[in-house]
Length: 537
Ligand code: GLN
Image 1 (cartoon, rainbow, N blue to C red):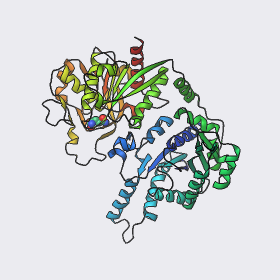
Image 2 (spheres, rainbow, N blue to C red):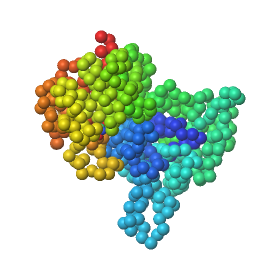
Image 3 (tube, rainbow, N blue to C red):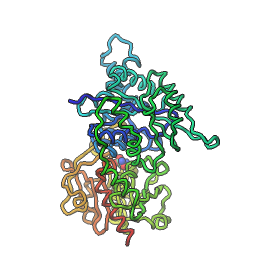
Image 4 (cartoon, protein in one colour):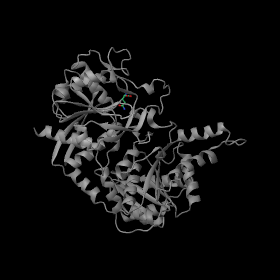
């Protein structure tokens, strides 16, 4: 049983400074120094989870093995650390209030007035320490979403204040991430916004131990001295975080700045030899020095916001590095595709990915893109909704089942080749009720996927309500679209492959959630390889 220490990461001045990447980079360095580390994100919004949020609002919803719908930062944590996260790694204000209110109804606080302090803060502290109490981790890093000064995050900051006090200085450290803007007209870096942010944090009773300063220019000694003086932080705990070429450079940059050493020193933990980042650095070097470039079309309906497909984009970086190619993603809006413009819009692509999604906006464009990939033998990967569209396209255009569709888009289709899962028929609530999390899938002998995964049983993460309708399986397989992966217990079709095509795979699950720097996802690696071969033809 380990005695867990805690690191809290707050952000100031502005949002989008990259708290998640700083937390993940610190965790990577600590992990490579031999500590077992995990990262948790506390989100201030009142939704129970981001599963009900439009991706335009909050980017991709990341799904864990245990079926939690979570913030996309958890994807970064997994990609950096190569260990799975779980429900306990993401907590929202909605979830905190829900638990407290449920307890109140059960009578657990009988006789008492239920208040933010202590009831809400107790629940937050309990959630923060849940991971630590497993005894698995030396260090738990907790990232507080939002920016210091937001009304929503006050109970979180108050809980951090209490925990820093209760756990004691050696057991808990506070890092504040801020922005040092550069004023071109004055030719100067400005520390005032950081001073204000720290002042606000200190008004809440939290003094940062470490400042991580995002900046476009190097911080000179004078600036560091000034920050130290005004912010009550030791000068060696002022860490410069310059803009990076890629997020995967940040662990090395933080190593250079000794962020990990400062954290360990503050917690009185041994600082042995430097962390071994050899494998990580091979990945980065290959990523930065590609031998070829390929063009992949990502056909989706949220393409204006690339964060909506974060894990897919990162999976291409991992797979690109392992193939030593640069994967150039062309973000293509499915709403803008028509049978007339498809040949000109897709002709330069070496691979086509039809993305996950919900609802019927842009759906015909996705189906037409599948048709183009199938007929022109362009490598194709369909993920979740993308796989379903591949089944629909095949049914319509090869089997001649006119108007074949998913009952999600047309409940009255004469040919529901994709229909609502049996278990979903009684579901009324929208939140957290899809088929979620990791499920087993058995791969067929002699299939392309079996040769890619080199395993018979795989486990992949799901997030859907609709499925392949097995009543059409015989017809569809006879015509050449084969179900090569099935759930061994229920026979649900999880993978389809097209015969007589160089690379055409549709998966009902989301492989992108499991790709990491250390283990690029085999399906993405092979898809990129096929696209590379296509480009060299
Ligand atoms: N809308 C489809 C379903 O619910 C696909 C979901 C997805 O792409 N994640 O089955």
